[in-house]
Amino acid sequence: MTFEIWIAFVFAASANILAPGPAIVLAIRNGLSLGMGKTIYSTLGNVVAIGCVGLAVTLGLGAIITTEPKILSVLRVLGGSYLLWLAYQNWQRGMISLDHLSLDDEDATDTMGDAGADTDSIHRSSVSSRQSQRSAPYLFRQSLLVGLTNPKMIIFLLALFPLFLNAEVATTPQLLLMTGTFMGLSFLSLSAFAYTAVKLSRLIRKPATVTFINKFIALIFFGFGSSLIYFGMTTI
Picture: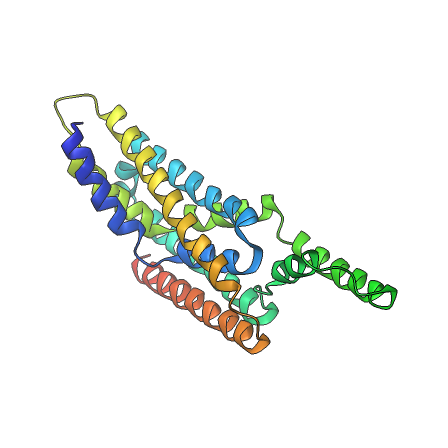
C-alpha cells in the first residue's frame, strides 16, 4: 500500500468514525458521568472490538457473510437488543450522575468543622458505591459488546477495505495496516468526544439538566436499537 492510498484511506475512515453512532454516544455519556480516567477503558473496549472485526474481515468474514447473509441480520438484532437495554438503563436509573464532580469540588475545599464531617463521609460513601458499579472491566466489556454487535462497522470495513487493496502485493499486511489505522483513528475520535464531554460536564450542575441528558441519551440508544432490530428482522 502506497502512502497516497493510505492517506486516502485515513480520510475515508475518519468520515465514518466521526459519523454519530452508539460508540460516540457511549463515550459522551461516560465522559459526562465518570470523567476521563475511567472513560478511557470504554474507549479501549471499542478499539479492541474494531481490531476483532478487522481481523475477522482479514480471515474471511466477508466470504462467510456473503454465503450466509442471515448472520449479519442476527448481529443486527443482537446489537439492537443490547442498545435497547442501555436505553432502559439510562431512562430508569439515570446513568449520568456527575458524582465525580462533587468529589472533585469537595477535595478542593477544607472541611467546615466536625458537624459537617459525618455528612461528607456519608456522601463520599454513597458516591464510591455508585462509581464502583462503573468499574474499568465493566466499562471495557460494555463498549466491547457494543462494538462487536455493531453491523455498521462490519459493513463499513467489508465495503471499505477492498477499495484500497493493491491486488499485486500481499493483501494480509494491507488489511492489518488498515485495521490498525482504523483502531488508532477511533481511539483519537472517542477520546476527543469524551474529553469534550468532561469539560462540558463542569457546566452542568442542575439536577433537571442531568435528568434531561439521561432521557435524551436513552432516546438515542432506543432509536439506534429499534432501527437495528427492524432491519435485522426484515432480512432474516
